[in-house]
Image 1 (cartoon, helix red, strand yellow):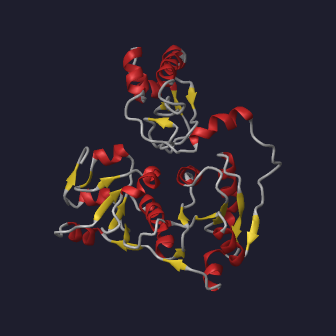
Image 2 (cartoon, helix red, strand yellow):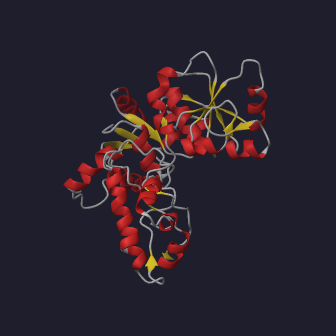
Image 3 (cartoon, one colour):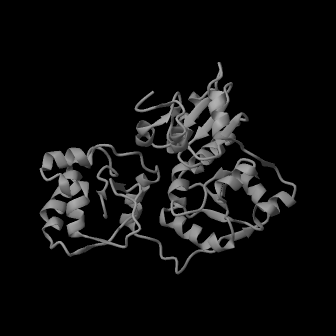
Length: 327
């Protein structure tokens, strides 16, 4: 993996040390013995939940020589220090991963092409939502915040669409999808069936505009800008600022006083969050904050706002009160 290596903890903590030793043997006993000009192609992009220490890169490939010089796993030559490095600083990963090993061992279903889910009228979609299905709004987060279908999940379409959906929605959940546009439908289905989310009841015909034209319920998520967030955080009784980034991001620098609950763990902690205090969700750039806002609104919370401009990095750049490590 360019600039890093595969994580060793995805099958559980008990086997992780054994996998770390095997990884050491693979890298130092085999790969780094190859000539420097051998090309190294990526198996995942930087930022994948499956990778450890991998840097984001626009390169198509690197070489053994470049990896020998720049890959932190190559620098850990001694086995015990390598194992410690491989097991340190690993963030959380999507909850659907626990089902992947069995699916991969069983092998994929032979589909003969990308399935074509039904096109659902707004009224048909509404009836299915009343019966157990969940609606996933894959428009960009600023569109979702402005107005969306009441009770829908915000999961913006992109390279990590399936990863977030598989993290935030229950395994096996029947889905109704609202894509950004018709051109994205096949890509959305392809991503979802690759992770075992194949109960796709259909797409909302006509998208959000058709739902609104049918007079069906919609709502909005209020935004808050950086300066207003600073002002309200200085009040005697400030709102609760909920930082939904991963723990390593939070520890590196966060809004002073913010509570860190990772987005992927938010649903597990809803009962512990107060209902009488306003909640403001923040992240690095707005997408995760919007997804968190949709979860909080589905939990019946009305007094929820999303940091709609910039993110924690801009807060820090402005010199506003910041902390590092645990609060």
